[in-house]
Structures are given as structure tokens and as C-alpha cells.
Length: 188
Image (cartoon, rainbow, N blue to C red; front, top):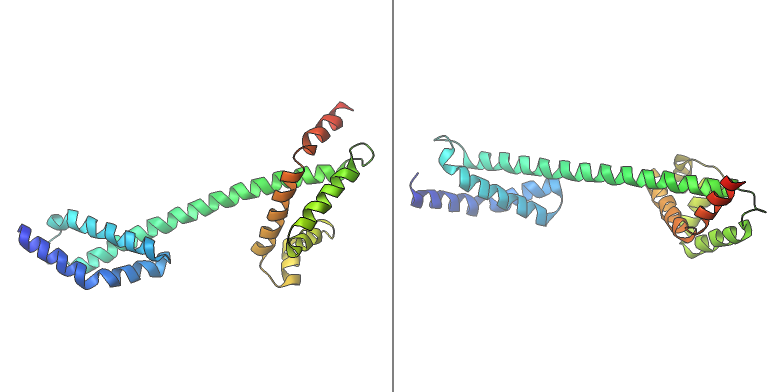
């Protein structure tokens, strides 16, 4: 294809379809800036491959295919990232839950339990009321996340969010007591 006609064909496609391509991408990625970036990347891909396309091929259909693939790659990346974050969060939540259970199981007379309980209560008082209530329902009443969610009319993910927020705060506030507990527990 001649360079001038190649440029004219590209400009015509760009002018006519760019807004539609961005809307198409945005309907899937739900982020206007990302949709525009993916569309611009697709235009670069089209420009680089214009000479290799078969005569009579539909440039708009080619572009939609490229945008579709770029959106799929973007969404798959987000999915993997979220799965990784969830796994890391689950591990941190399990680890913190284990620490809290070990603190709850220790003998109050041996391990400054009044001081620890005071820190726990102070930490819970410093958090928003809903998070503290959800944490108490989970730990004190032994309700499942689903039971709490149903009781409060929120999602299970919402319950998990509040519990992990409290556990993060407790982990921070009780960080000095966990090693002492292990030392005293294993030396006796």
C-alpha cells in the first residue's frame, strides 16, 4: 500500500471509529483512561500491521479484534492480581487469627492478660463501631461471616473487610506481646 494512501486510510479509520472503539473497550474495562490507552495501543498495532493485512479485509473488524484481545489481557491481569491479593490477605488473616487464638488460650495469670485485654478493648474502641461490632459477633458470639452478613444486611465480603481491618489493627497493637507469649509458653 502506498504511504500516502496508507496514512489516509489510517486517519479515516481513526477519525471515524476512535470514539466508538474507546466506548467498546470502556464497556469491558470500566476505566475510561485504560480504555483509551488500549484503543491507542490497538491503533499502533493496526498501523504496524497494515501492510500484512489481506486485501479487502475490514479494518474496523480487525481493530475490534485487537481491542477485544487487549481488554481480555487487561482483565485477566486484574483477575490474577486480585486472586493474589486475596490469597495474601487470607494468609495474613489466618496468621493473625492464629495469634489471637493463642493469646485467647493463654493463662491470664501468666501472661499479662489484663494488659492485653485492655489493649484489645482500646483498639476496638478506636475503630469504627460497625467494625468492632462485627469483630465481636465473629469472635465473642462465634457467628460465621455469612450469619453476620445476613444479620446486618451486608455482603460476606463486607464482613471479611471489617474483620480484617480489626485484625490488622490488633496485629499492630499486640506485636510486642506475641513473641513474649511464645517465649513463656515454650519455656514452661
